[in-house]
Length: 146
Image (tube, rainbow, N blue to C red; front, side):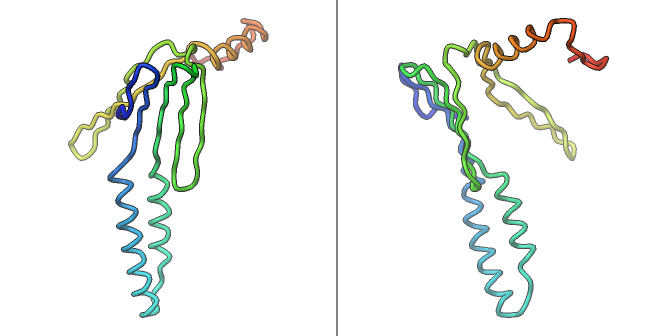
């Protein structure tokens, strides 16, 4: 994620996968060329279509807008299959953290970092109210702790 706008009124963070966004254009051209070739020679193009569909599942754009005058946080996700939007009150935001995940593959170690917004109000208040309404003794974790 990268800050694309940072003013006293608005902070906009974007995660636009440019490499993954450019790659579909190359794949479309490759699939179209292979399809035309296969059609002229009588081959099947099912695997090309399935490969492209699977690739599209990984392409997505995320934009987080923190709007001080509007008092809101808007998280928009967009992919080739559609878009979604989630809104929270800016007053519910208590802090931002960085989460990391490490993976090891073929002798290489990679660490990915992701920004995390911690909301102490809003949805967490609804969960707390629901838990208190049920009574503290009625929470069953099945012998496991969280």
